Length: 422
Ligand code: SF4
Image 1: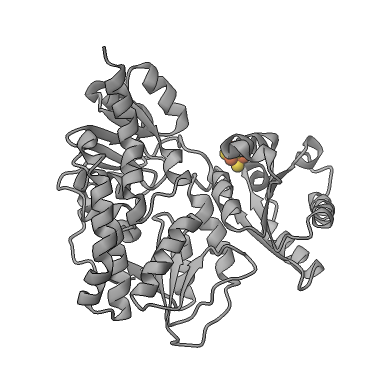
Image 2: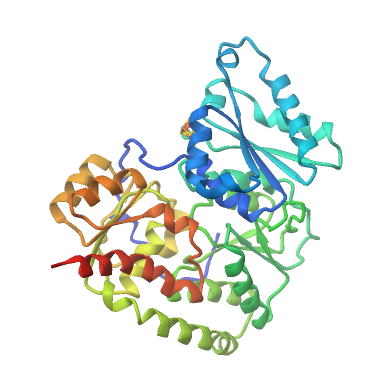
């Protein structure tokens, strides 16, 4: 991995702790992945629990024509009385008859399919062969035994890497990796174009049938911090992963674009000139919310893997005090540029023990606690203001234009509390 961000990593601040996960499993990634890839379908091979989890995470999708479903494993499947593969083939045939628009079908593994040791990779190969030229079938795991929350996107993208078409050796290209809202993708496309950089592709693409090319001249710019497996798969195919902070907040976005621009040979003067106006606009908008956050104390429970870049933004650009920052796991390589920007002595906890963390939060009583849905209600009942981390994954938060919106997400509960005070 290449680095253009010269700063020391303060990873000695971390202390890995093993504890029960309190986050959603990787199936949750389907919610944003199916919105991004308009011609893909996600078929979870799982249980009723998986189906319920997906429906509640996806909320309003019950009214749409969804592009995900759950093939429910019944008791006779679990007892080995039925040939699950035969049933799966039949189900896929029926699905394709009804939905001829599907270009890529993802078979998504779950805890039950993993316990049953169902080989979904083999099933994907078989189904792809059964529909030559019509359909690509890929398998990945969203099981709660293997993945947490955002890791479902990592395993999905990793499964797609092998199918990316090859670019001639050495031919330059920039690949932005990680799901971004279309509006954010368009903003970044305009900035790359203004900087004279291209061709630029985004992965995952809006259409799974239009996969971006990949080769030894491809520079990879990660837009999300939870894509370690995907990064390694891209490197295995010869691409070079650039090391940068993530495009969260004004500073993160500026540094992220700067790393890519320098790797592309864009002159510093040109970079400063192009970024001047969007940065000024973003600073003006952010100034509206930063005062509500300045001096306030915040704690993060491990959940989405976005904790470090968001903590960095809230501390450096909004003046918040970081009590502790929990992350589900610390990918030291992908987080090096981010950890280096945290203030000295930050309590950075990997896989923090949730019970102990709850005790600390109750004792410290931060102004705001970022946590999963399961912890938010009890903490609110105890009079602590919370922010659901899932909201951060479902909202467009990357880029200059979104920096103020991101600050507003944190300022809103604090402002509401102020107003409710008598
Ligand atoms: S994959 Fe596992 S953790 Fe996720 S909903 Fe299904 S049973 Fe629960």
